[in-house]
Length: 68
Image 1 (cartoon, rainbow, N blue to C red):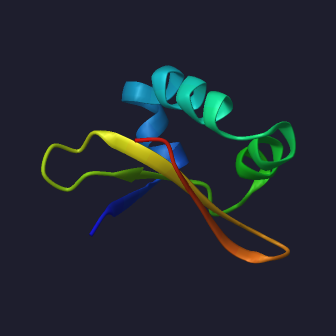
Image 2 (image 1 turned 135 degrees about the horizontal axis):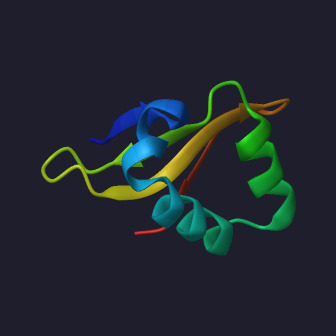
């Protein structure tokens, strides 16, 4: 089980690190879709709140990509 935080709520504290990891894990199209999504979220481990991936919606529904 994971917890999702809306990107705009999470970005203030850890945004640069997470966005760099997302950029490295996603191809250019997915990364652009993630940044432009109204439902961009950071997926975190519930035990330590460490980011483990990203989630967003696009024309194909909910997309999840895990980088840890």
